[in-house]
Image (cartoon, rainbow, N blue to C red; front, top):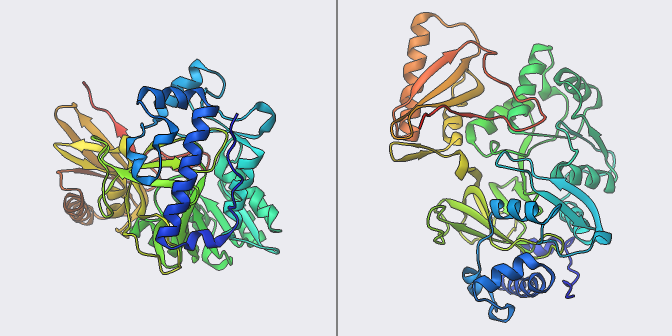
Length: 442
């Protein structure tokens, strides 16, 4: 059976390669990966054979578009037919050291195993951009069991000599007291829960801005790249706010920097494409579409042209001010294809609603988009909360301003429902909070 070469991941210089050397490295790894999956995995041999492709026909990045897509439903079906991990596993059981499962809500979770080789690459990817060092404390607000990113983050923290505090099982008040007492350098959680914790701390008479937190890392959901959400996080925590991004099916893939809000994708580990979610047509930088990744280094469950259902926009191919030269996703992840709300020919992302709601100082950060009516004639209503008490006249004026702002931002007619504070569901730190309630009939 063929094997992939051993690659260097720890070298931070891989993130600053000029364009042509980076493309040459990707092409070399793509050729090796296609040969490997064809020889090592029945799943990929079947897919390539069905498309009349042999590994010798994949010579460089220009041949990527000839290769078949891979989708999550395909992988779910393969794991169902070839339990427990599917026929796209390329390594033997004796090589496996970590098990995780995807955390999304679309169908059965995908089971993910990592060989010792691949898990070492995951930790090396973290170590080449360390957030912490000896003497630092990092608090993870959500659970880590079965989740790749938080587990890798915790192991990396210990690996570089910092202390990792896993607070996922604690209630919100206990987490606030831990932050108050331990004075961590880094706090990690979803944007929704990080905002909720600001609210909880204020109710306890604690100002999170005074506790010395250096970095707040938003993971697990889009949010920190939305201007209004980022401002609320910065105002509430008094810290640098950054995004972390990865996919259990692939690897931890990247994050932002102090110079840019774009997600910097580790382009020595994956090739990034943006395609039209309906037609599959490749889209140029500056045009939003579905993100597609090809794994270049993993030997256990490697994926080629994996359609993520995430929506993002590629930045132009100029280096970031920090020196990063790989693929960058402008404004991070803008939403998911599955979360798009189609209203009379216009597609609306929850992030666009979020940007408007969180720009109103009178409102709490919470919101909910409710789609009523029928599939043929849907209507959209946005439910929000006020942070205090409004007179009837102020309530009416706020509703009018919010309606106008939403209509301007999303270009469809929208209803607004303003509720008392504490009415809408809150993130609990244990999972993703659903923002869209679809009540359409038919």
